[in-house]
Length: 489
Figure 1 (cartoon, rainbow, N blue to C red):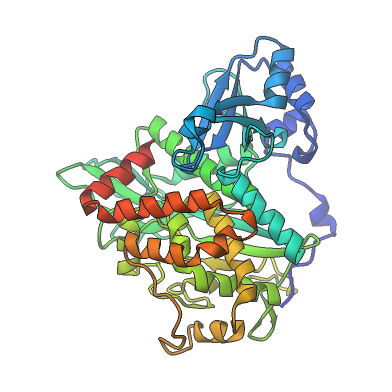
Figure 2: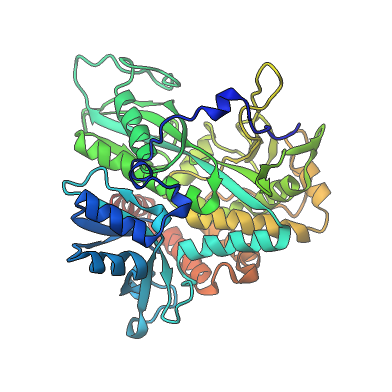
């Protein structure tokens, strides 16, 4: 199996008009944008506000808003950024309150027009710098970029990813509703789902922000309204397109932001809670991964059933470190309920072709009549859910793959964890954690893999272990309430 060749015929030459609103206005590819381009556009378009958007230590999007007084002031904002309180943005991660200044540093190529703002608002995504002017070690953005740089330096490849963003949409029940049926909503269309228009609007908005979308559809989940709350819930999914890891992580957060804002404005509710109700489908965040070398997506299999060398590292790293990656990818109490009932979720640390109960799955790759692959071959990591911190999860995946090079017998690990092997074929493999305490133990055992190369700061790992330990000691209902409050933040 080879990677899909690039089309050079007449169809490939005919491009659709650009859907990226700001790219269309500026008239350049995003990769070529400068702060001067943003200033010129903002003056022409009458931009009233500028929002510096970034990812905090809790994994959620944050914003710092400005009203530019002049073109010169706007240039200062989009070139230099602004200072902020690092001890508040990254609490418990070693930034002292007495010397906590950090800098939000804009990246012009990430800008977009806020589709929800009442006044013309330019949003620019930012990274973080410390007081020394270097990338801030505690920032999720810094950590992911450091992991990507290490991967390229040590293996000479780039990893691309896409997220399958699953979510439940809720609206008040009406007796005239004809929607849905229990666990039968997969690929359903209106009028048998009420969220179709919301999903399509979200896909259109995301494309306008410069986020490539692969497809969207209704999912299996459906929860009938109860007398207690009167809310009818149905599940949907938006699958994004492959991008470099840093863009892929941002795209997941922006997708969740767009979905929630649209739902709020339409009088509905949106939730990515891993498990809404026992016995029903949960919200996963499956991640597809594709290794690129010099711009070419590599095949997953070199020949027959033999994994390509870089894919072997990826699969081996995921099965070895899957449990510890739950510290970043499965952070809610209901994460364990989703795994326990094993509906469209992994039940054991296994990998294999096509199997949706596996921790790591190798999906089928469609091809045209001529045999040309129409999508890129990927490795799918099915363990994460809607509570994931996308940046730290993807950084952890990179570190796990790099650590697989040190595996005593990688071939034995791969063979023993394949779906066709007997259970318990490898004695030292960690079981899939079923509670926060087990996740904390797994992270503690594997922390050296994540800290390798200076990618994950030890203080951050300490903070995550402490948070997991505190969650393990809280009553389950209190933990659920804390997770719901974090989701609403």
